[in-house]
Image 1 (spheres, rainbow, N blue to C red):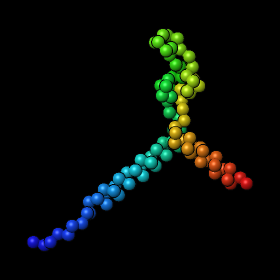
Image 2 (cartoon, rainbow, N blue to C red):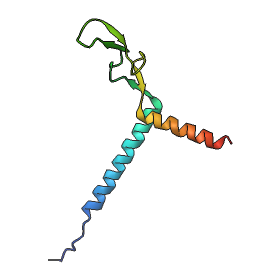
Image 3 (spheres, rainbow, N blue to C red):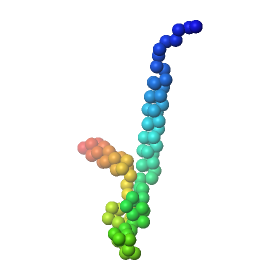
Length: 92
């Protein structure tokens, strides 16, 4: 029988696959932030209205989204911030 070397060949391949999966998910989220910058407001579930505190029929405008029912994705906020930072730097 040939002697087998004690090498850990399975671990680096798993780490590379995990890294590639992380890169793919990150670029997918960036693409989603670029194509669909808004998501439904979590507080009013996209309606723009906020029900009364004790389940009554009265409602008011949602303060979190100002009644639009939409909010910017956190990733889109970062993209907008970086865009403003870049434009401030290049317009000197």
